[in-house]
Image (cartoon, rainbow, N blue to C red; front, top):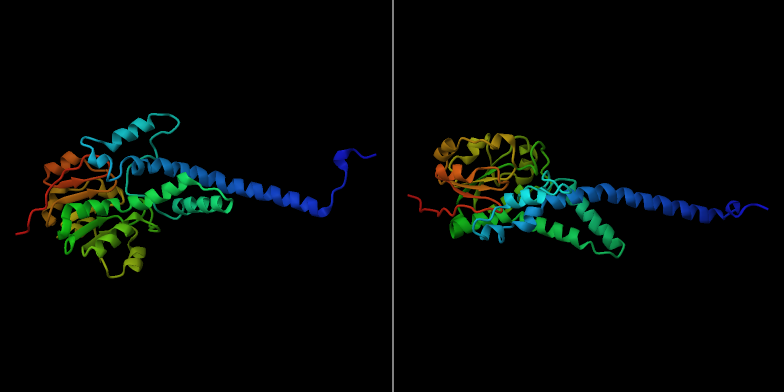
Length: 274
């Protein structure tokens, strides 16, 4: 008599078991790398949870960088992916977050943390425009705004779901004139933005006659600008730093009103043009 483990089973049952095994492995394969990426992205948006325009900026003396260092001092977390900013974009993280949310719903499970990450990221892309609007008030219409960086991150020409596109659209809707420059992402940007913005030939060309400069993508060539030269080219001296890469004291010493993410900003008042 055959041992029980060798008892034959019907072909359909064997196929069903195999399909279920493959499906389980496929789901695991889908969730493992995507969840790892989302974890990194959760760390990256910590500033969007701890330092949006309505929180740390409104607390006198608050500094999101101190929060970043405090959180990153935990060896289980680290500091590599927790930098403040104006939202994430690109072809991977947004897609992976949304895919995991859909997968959860397909299995009757609400992934509330991921839904919050997605919603907060969308809100964060509006933070810099809110700062600009608050600074200029009703005088924003007709003002010229220079934007440095269109790609969703440095060293790529990928502009998919880039925060810069959301900012530019909001500025145009408010009646502002926009002058943009990106070292490599101009071709795709021209296709999307057409003639609605002025495409500058260099970073300095972008700030000519501008009432404000907005740093969106932290390209290396934007990190050490000649503020004296930039001041001479601009019509009004205001800088909105979406990646916190500039020194507030240096900007203020050069006569700029400086605004950033999650730390005390100068509150320079817009003076009437002469």
